[in-house]
Image (cartoon, rainbow, N blue to C red):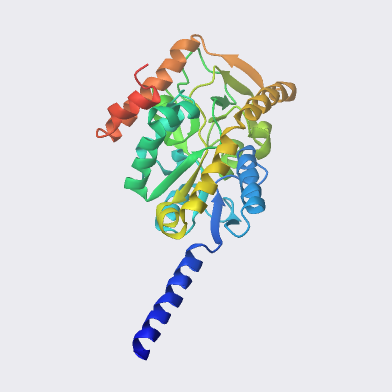
Amino acid sequence: MKFQLKKIALGAVLGLAAVSAQGAEVTLKAVSVFNKDAFFFRQFNEFMNSVNAEGKGLVQIQFVGGPESMPPFEVGSALRSGVVDIANTTAVFHANLVPEGLALTVTNTPMAELRKNGGYELMDKIHREKANMVWLGRTTDGLKYHVYSNKKPDGNSFAGMKLRSVPVYRAFFQSLGAAPLQVPPGEVFTALERGVVDGYGWPSVGIFDLGWQEKTKYRVEPGFYNVEVSLFMNQDTWEKKLNNEQREFLKAQMAKVEANYAKDHELAVAEKKRQEEFGIEMVSVSNGDAFVKQANTEAWKAIDQASPKYAAELRAKFGGNQ
């Protein structure tokens, strides 16, 4: 009888310990593919500060470092394996793992609509299946990419130009006659200085953060695509280390970020003005509509080829049939 009571008591103690552990504060290791002084670190920094201020006793974030601590193109693998728990990155940088993630950049469908039409669930599902990642959401929405260069394009042709590229616009740059080269952001300035590249694709914001304005003469209009920077988490951390209260807390923190996109648009307008004041000349291609259409066509063609399983559904949810 005494033995049975001891077993019951021990079971109760272990049960309480399990509940206590499940409800304990969890610290997430975080990295960013962008430097602390970069435009695309700002929203992530606000997210971390908010989580750490409001999540005491629940969730905390320990920032491990930026690209100086982990090369941007290795962050996806680090997330998949659980080396880090959460990352401020872009699906462009882990397209080798999840080529479908390029749809996040090509789409013009707002994040709010993607949460309503099933696009969010689809992209999250694909990331879970292919890379053991959870997509928390976007930190930017509605910003455009541009071609920046030291040479003026000839109409809609960039023949002979070497442009720094990433997977999402590699095919587009090739269709323009340019030679795309994959160069990490931290090496672009030197590549421009040494003539390794003549220009680069980059969002409408952020070149001053990196010092690239010193080696840039032209910004090509119109802009194309929809710049995507997101927060991704390791799926095992999300499902096994966090309880429901902690997951709901992080979802609420993500919602605060998504309510703040308008500020990015205001800053983008101010940065374009700053570029022109610095002496970067705005040049327009001869047919802007055809230029943008060509960008979209080439990107969706690449997604179709890389993901026959999901391509049709991605087009339906993310606007690739427009």
